[in-house]
Image 1 (cartoon, one colour):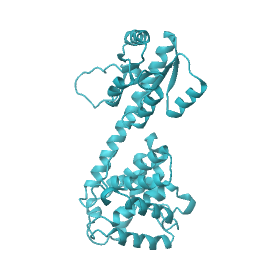
Image 2 (tube, one colour):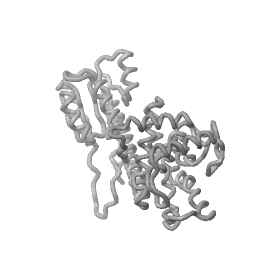
Image 3 (cartoon, helix red, strand yellow):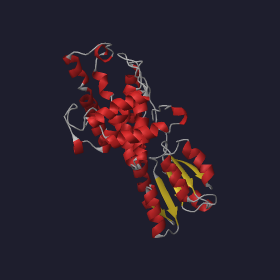
Image 4 (cartoon, rainbow, N blue to C red):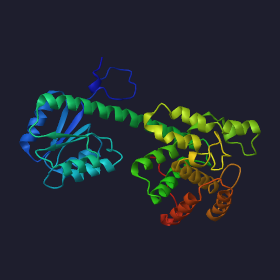
Length: 344
């Protein structure tokens, strides 16, 4: 059986295969430190690359090839803090474990590194019997993160495929995610909440996988039974995503994006304070995109016509008026007046 610490996620293969060694990057301007770490890590079966400057290492880090980075706090061309900040701001490397190497670090420097997302600290000189168990744990953490990232990628692909079932709604989920993100940034939501909001928006219609084409693509009015089928999709989507821990905080968006503030929506009749701000934002973005794109049953409305309808519905108590105002302002600021949707 393959050891847990070297197992990585890969597609099913019919022939025998061997997991590649986890790749560790050592970034330190002291050649003796690099040599010692390389000797210890390579001896334990890891593939090691060493770098004396930040920029030389960042080219490899940006490529997404690393499973773990040892990063010196002080480098000749950039500080370790600067490198760490770049790693955490890039979606490709945001989950990459980073261990900060330091001969001495003040409490302020450590607090700053923790705020930027450092995984661990390793003081120089270091003991091999402490180093290797920590490395095994961190590499395993990265491999688990890779599995979740891959699973999430597959769900995004599925969401895109569901959009593509109807040529009139192609790109809908990505546009809703982008509109929602624009509004959320204007309302100063933090980065963690933005990520949860974007995930929920991308996957909000996932449950439509269970809706037959005859209902989903019907050009005329739906029967009561057909409306019932459509109205189950938030529940189905929630059930499909519930096993994914990374989706836990995004599930309310998936389940409640058809609820209304006055309690007249579906599937649960939630109202008012029971609908989080992230849900309110995605709901408004969803409705706006639906109104301003062509559907099988009607032509696209102009933005102004859409705003008029939505203003009336705000007065009816359905939607959050502040969210709608921020959406309108965000759309007005779009370069060229158009949104270029992204699945990411």
